[in-house]
Image 1 (cartoon, rainbow, N blue to C red):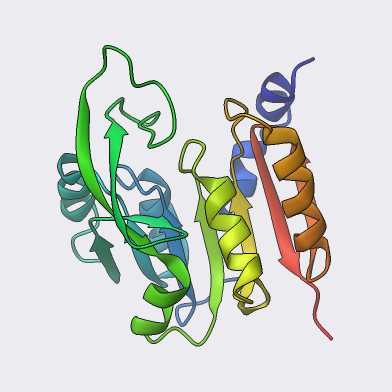
Image 2 (image 1 turned 180 degrees about the vertical axis):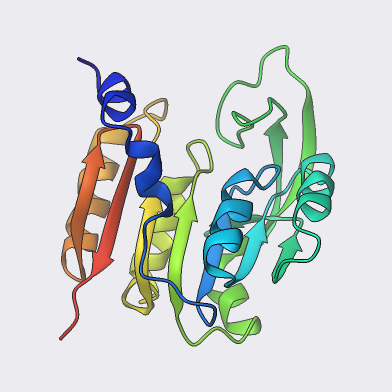
Length: 199
């Protein structure tokens, strides 16, 4: 059985919403799209969510969906650097790093995650969801290198396999995460969750 089929067989979708959060928790939704995940987290816990979605039309749907919740939308892509990039617009599969030929491509803003988190005044993050279609490698490498990873209590990550040398990069990131976090559960290349190791 494939990890995707196992994920569905186990009813593991529920795991994406089972984290130790409260109304005071700070959550990052990187790759927020139109806000389905954020809305369920907000309904369950009432926490504050900082959402990142670089495609404006999806960000506007997010804002409408999240009206009344404690959420703020940032129309940019979390990254390892400030600047600009081109993104292929393809619903939930929209990507900065692949699928360029013959597709709808638009410019978007990228922001250096560590700097941006400091500007937002985040002392730490209770949960960070990452689903950014291949750009997760550069982002996670950046958060490890800058020392931000220990400040994130829980991580929910979807990894993608269409980048060159993705396996080696994944193994390097996993080793970095294991220094500060433990793997809670893993459906390979579907979803995985990490929890910070508390002293």
